[in-house]
Amino acid sequence: MEPTGFLPNEASTREEMQRQCRSDFEQLDKTIDLCLSLISKSEGLRITPKRTHLVGFVVMSLFQKMIKSARAVRVLSELGLTGDANVVCRGLFETQVALRWILERDWDTRARHYVVYIWKRTETMGNAWCARPELKETGEGILKQVRVAIDSAKRGLGAAVVDRLKRSYDGGSGLEQTAVAVGLGPEYDVLYRRLSQAAHAEDMPDHVNQKNLDAIELKASGSWTQVRFALFSCRHILCDSALTVTSAMELGYAAAIDALRPETNDPGEQAIERWLARKAQELQPPS
Image (cartoon, rainbow, N blue to C red; front, side):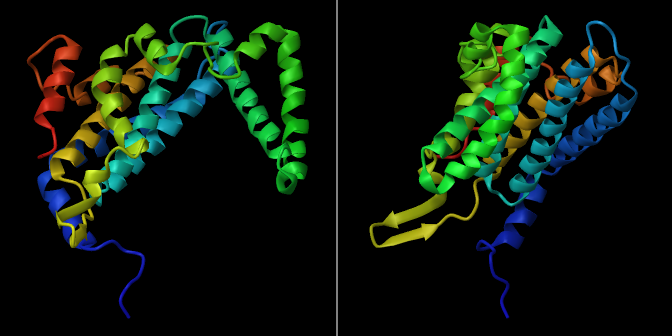
């Protein structure tokens, strides 16, 4: 019996991607392994007035999420599923921005704001479910739990602050403004905008070969240059975040992380925006 649930030519696609992107896969694997070492070392995290239990919990939780996402990008890229890898990598960047924002200043306060933001988003979902008869009971259960936490936050932070956290963890700015504020403006323009095309279903031409109106064929995988862009973006974002985390949490490994950064191994332009633009042009998919 033929196996089911597989896309056409998966085996040959995997072989092609491994051959064309071997070095990229190897470098990302090394980066993931090193980041897992950071997670292991964080078990003995030293608590200080600045680096509170809450800060450690939020920061290391977000970083663990990033490692899992990087692994997902790696698996999807091996199958040539570049659009799906880009969607995950897009989420990786959003987490990078959140980490940078929390650790920019006022660590404990910002960690608290981030947690309350999650509660407020959960409350929004509960309200939407309550408006649907078939989900009303479940929605009420969600609201009962989360509103206890929100009420507690209002007593500690003030109702006005908590209400501002309904839409964003920084109280009003959109992702682009927050990214620019924490020094990730070039990454937003060069990486995030391109990674967002698949999330917004703007990558339609990547999925079919249309020779004429009567001959539309499934395109099972993206080009290897697209795969390299996803892997490059993933490694750049993960290495930058690992440096941010290891500096704040005092976990060591900074030199080892820096050695794995794509820009460290590709000297040339010193300005990050010019370097990112050059890499994006080099990895532009064929027309």
